[in-house]
Image (cartoon, rainbow, N blue to C red):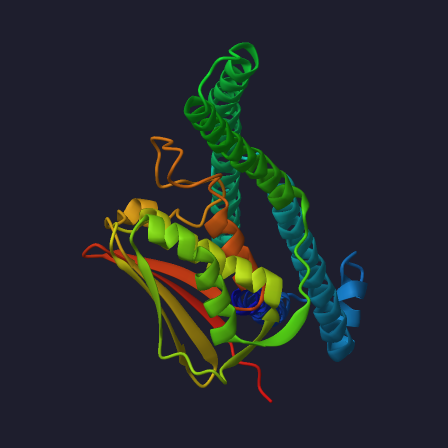
Length: 365
């Protein structure tokens, strides 16, 4: 908004300055012409029969009226000239804006519209950048759908194969039956995870997030989430600690969606953390915002990957390892939820430690 005001004022100042200079020059030229004309024609001896004599005589007798009329004519002429020029500028800008989306090369405008040209260049850059990001996100989504569809075949084939063996081989020992059933159940659970990822993709694209605000205890919310993660943490011999979070610390948020944010952050910390390490969750209250951090010990994330970690369908494990990560939507969804709450989310990774920081505005009482 400030940039637009600055551009508008700069163009108007330049425009009216040129109008003023043109007006002053025209008035000075008119006075000079009258002076020179009077000096020149004053040297002649007039007999009254000359064709131009009546006009010159009238001008001589009505100099003030003549000057006022000429001033009005010049003023009107200058006004019309610059009005047409302003309309031409407007038309030029409109044509540039109409072809903005499909224009590959940079728009070129009149040098007097250099501020507008720079603004349009910024808009062009942003449009092309957004289009590129949309194409990349769409390509990642398409690749992911292909990957998931391919990955569905493996557990499904295993389930069908083991169930077929159980049906056809009646003499299988109870121990072997138990083994086949366990494998089938494990593969079926993996199938469920993959199907849920398909639903996650659809939900993220079609669902509009609407917040239902409530006041909850931050510590209780985090304790519940950590409790639900205990079985998975134990499998990786990991631990999760809540550092110095007061019981009375409350936040106003959409409880279900904010739980999803911390669920995604903890899941990410667990999946990419070292086995046997500890995940730290801490909170700190500032005058205008609340900061919650989730820290894990794991491989340092490269800067180029860290810059894209909140993009839709972006996965750190580009090798598509099924055990690490899902549809690549968890952090993107967390970012959207936090921003809908008026906050922000960021990530920092250095020296084999990765910290996700969520900042939420503090509601004034």
